[in-house]
Length: 126
Image (tube, one colour):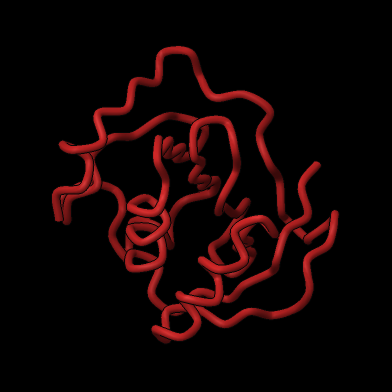
């Protein structure tokens, strides 16, 4: 299991979109289901993310960002620490501690649903 950095997001949408744009092959799971609509009319809004129970962004099979239960339990994979640092510099989140194997509510999924098909260009509509 990868080490996870605990973060406290302030602007959920900005963090999510930055992480998605940073991934070569973005995979976004919301409440265990893949999504591809990242526009303002999709689920990745400030209010929409706040109401999610499970959220995870991956680069292919590699976890980058996620939370379980509430965005206040958000984590960033230690291998992507530069993403957390950038988002903190932008004022979108606060890094709350060092990377560890366990974070309350932090859960990384083993597999991405096989039905997921990412069309990166169409996904980043704002």
